[in-house]
Length: 446
Image 1 (cartoon, rainbow, N blue to C red):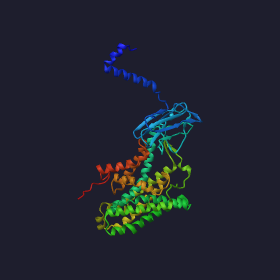
Image 2 (cartoon, rainbow, N blue to C red; image 1 turned 90 degrees about the vertical axis):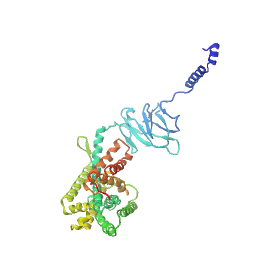
Image 3 (cartoon, one colour; image 1 turned 90 degrees about the horizontal axis):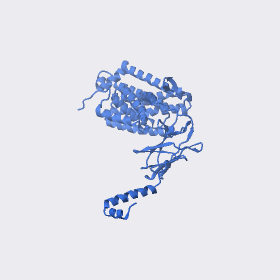
Image 4 (tube, rainbow, N blue to C red; image 1 turned 135 degrees about the horizontal axis):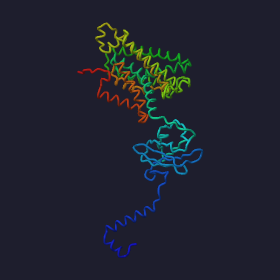
């Protein structure tokens, strides 16, 4: 208790008076402000609020941990006795809301849902605000035991998928690399040749109802006809007119756009599946922790056999040797008696067939066929060709496998939405530090 004499002493010392008033105000504030609820985090600090209720069989679950991450912000909260939780966030953008399954009662897990991603951390859903500043995020629960795959097993599984994808990518990349090596043109419409194989198979096997074992060979034959027609009707006349490489590339971009929207006109903008037996997509244990479906094994086998056949053709056949000669020096090859136009036409046929086969295999790998599926692969195809070395078929093979592994392994650490960005990064780094690629040769310019 402060006496009158003590009070006047404080009045004579302003610093002591100010300190006493500060202590008193803090004490009053601590009495006036009630403590925050355990189910609320930053709701009084930010205007945008995520909320939800965690219940199982209409019974609220308390103490369940919820994590909110996004835009450099993260917060966590525990549900209250009513299963309720709220988290305030600073910005109106997309956030990852995660329910930590280890905090659920034993035998309870988040029910499977296409919008939910399951990881070691828990069940995650991407949420964003609509027209209001509040967004409700709820998880549906069910009985079960969540089996979390160890990280090393996921690495091995992703690496096998990456190898499979890389082999498919190699089929299209080698075709593009051979065309570039013999003509010097970067063909952007090569992406639509990938789509062509899948769409033609769809036409024969779904629209006409013919067996898939007949539809695939017919689609490859049609791809060969299109490759032949491209060179006869378009590319050879343009070569004879002496168009520059840049002009030819612009023509290929226009041709690509025309084909792409032609595909959309005929098959629509949705995704269509090729006919398949559900038992062929079921994962089978091959050995150890390696699980593959019959579709995966057949796809990898076809890719390997075809790639070996192409390698043998390039190394040991007359036309293959002529192709490599034209790749090194077209003028000298012509002077040596090689029919350059005939070999180039053969390469157009081969490149289009390889691209069509790649599209068919990718339609099962995705799975599904879409009008712009080839365009989605074009960046990866170019990245593989540049990484391996422009015009080198074996370089395209190595580059494709590296890109395939990179694409499938990236989601283990980063968001799956940006897995193709790694291919663009590889493309930039190769052009900066080794523009000739892994197996390419340096060329003197000027």
